[in-house]
Each structure stands twice: as C-alpha cells, then as structure tokens.
Amino acid sequence: FRLTSPAFGDGEPIPREYTCDGADVSPPLAWTDAPSGTAALVLIVDDPDARGFVHWVVVDLPGVSAGSLPRGASRTPAVPQEGRNDFGRGGWGGPCPPSGRHRYVFTLYALSAPLRLPGAPDAATVRRTMEGRVLGTARLTGTYRRG
Image 1 (cartoon, rainbow, N blue to C red):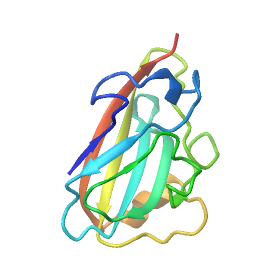
Image 2 (cartoon, rainbow, N blue to C red):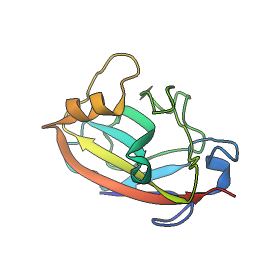
Image 3 (cartoon, rainbow, N blue to C red):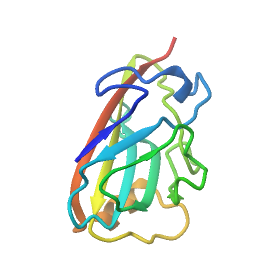
Image 4 (cartoon, one colour):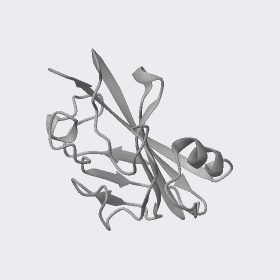
C-alpha cells in the first residue's frame, strides 16, 4: 500500500502553494495497492512536531485499490466527508509552523468497513471508530519551514 504526491516526495519540502504562506489548497495525492477487502479509506494529516496538530481529516473515501485526490480537493465533491482539523474548521489547513522546520505526516488508512460518522468528526473520534477495521496504512511525510 503506497501513498505519493506529484507535488513533493517523501521527506521533501511541501511547496508553498499548499501552506498558509501560499494558496493554502490541499496537495494532490495518489495511492496504489490498497489491501484486498478495502471498503473505505480515511486520511489524517498531522504534525508530530506540534504535538500531533491535525491539518486534515478525510473520512470514507471509496475503497478502491488505486485512486487519487486532485490539487485543491478539500471542500469539493472529490472528498465525500471532511472532519474538523485543529484550526477548528473542516477541510484542509495547510502547514503554518510558528518556527523551525516541521514534518507533516499524511496517513491513509485502508478500512474493512466505512465509518459512517455524522457531521465533521475530529481526528480522535475517527481514530477511535477505526479501531478493529484497519487493514493497512500508507504514509507520506512532507516538511515545511516558513520564510
């Protein structure tokens, strides 16, 4: 199971356009080889250098083996349901570190069943509800430093 972005490679800087210093749109993502039996996908993006600050929660993406999200997919029909990020709103909130270089971990979870959560759930609720349903995970890490 693999998660990639045409905008940046694993461990590389996230381009400015996807951050609070640019257009602050969600980056394009693509996945391949989701495990057999995948019924839904969940994406959580967080910053481990800021105590796990959550930048994006996407719930119940179709459980396809290979797929993608285009640039700026947040808050469009391409994303079926978005949760609440730690900025206090739904959708993508791009990197905006107060100081230094931070890492942003995009984790895509393959699930055996959709979560079907109401509203805009936060990452903690999504993680609790996923327990026992995760068939596999794929990760992509980007970095960003302001200035």
